[in-house]
Image (tube, rainbow, N blue to C red; front, side, top):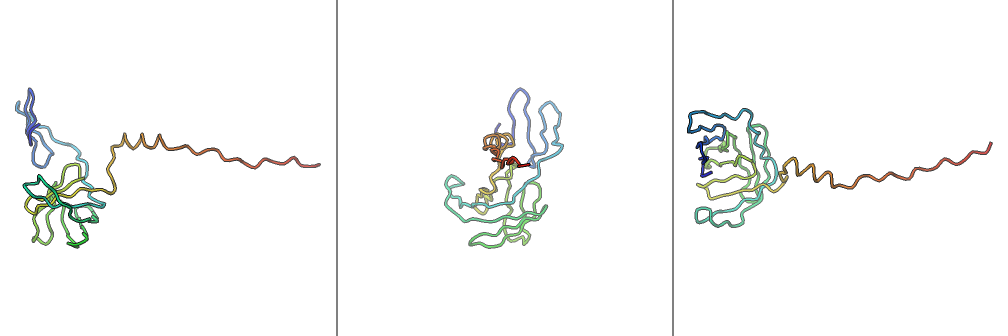
Length: 153
């Protein structure tokens, strides 16, 4: 895979929204039910230099999401409000550049603004990994029940 192109015996081009692949033999694959983007949590932002080759520490932001409405409150840059449109966060004020959301929802970036942000809380875990984690938890040990004393008759 290179960028938005799938290489192989049949080549495919992925749409920018990530919901279609147009194959070289003419067939189009369409994603039937996309996983909803969930941006809720705590994020760490980084300033990028050199076209993103180096990152320097930024700030921590708390993100709340209600459907397409997304708000982030950051330590120094304070409140930012966005509308989620596909894989883009568009500033409600129109004064800030759009932010691109990774399809997994765990990372966002703005090349124009020179920022990359990664969610660190809650961490996303694949369902199978979570199942394994639950299997390893100690089982509740049976508690000693008080024994009935024999009654004098």
